[in-house]
Image (cartoon, rainbow, N blue to C red; front, side):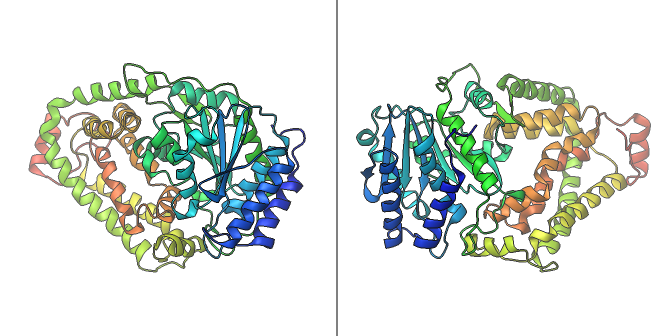
Length: 473
């Protein structure tokens, strides 16, 4: 809920001043310094005392014991007015400085986020100088890309165990989306976090997160562009309510160390407990072991994998890479920010996925299943567990469900092969469209069956190798 005195008009005024009267605020520029002066003036008017950390534009103000830290960066990339990235977040924190009911809060306005998280790194280095509690900060919340899209959270790495995720679910209403790939990424690569919360999580092991606006298809089209000039008041209100809830929530639980690594996650606002993930892993392992005698069928199954992936990827690549579709605005943004060529991949994504999916089912029907779907899923699960047990649980579920029908082993591949997810990966420069077809490697188990072929079918297959050997198996 928004603080009683929260004023959306004041937020809009802050955004307008930063974007129109000051304009682009690149790191080290006079405009960035002017933005810092403006922010300091607003904080002092609200009764706060800003303190410079490192470079003059980088400053923090604290009320109470400094147990929680909220951050918004004031800089932009050259040439962008930065309404969404990041004037809206700055405006929201300034208005919370005036109206928040939180009694224990620090507000930081960092410089050089777009130039390598420079301000946040200075704050981490000088943490004992500005925070009354030294390094014992309870929670760090960075804010970005607000004023558009639904509120989402990333940065929930391994420090966010089941109890802390439950704390989020209990204190946020509604609970922002936490996309599964973001959860896995933050657990695997805390150093790779690309916003100001990252250094606190990696270097100081402080529970941290990024509260941001996630546009449809995961891409804010005006990201780092001259057209980043507008914000949505309803989205600002939604983000501000989320931040106020985080600022006023009860104490964050201490980390719970159990016998097994935590593998909990948030799905649709509900916590899936770590025990459930490990139950899926155990069940998947048992499902695979029941078919261990079918290991000799694996070579034939792998040959089909190679053929199927080659066909499916071969269908997708021309559609997304050879300019068969017109370029969408999001592609032009990706071209300027990550260098991803604008080849029509944004528009082509649904057609590429549909064509490859149809080819996969035709290939499976024509050749018939070979090998064990549960065993193949369990083998992939074993690899995934080495990466992360939460990821392993997804393949464990596939190993169990494929006993009902082998096509249910498509679960991990089907999740990844959604047009919006593929678009988002490419928009952020993580996976080029030409490589989308590689995701079909995860569909390998679905080429198998849930039970071995009968002796009669095996004999028929030996006589007529192209004959399907039980499509419902």
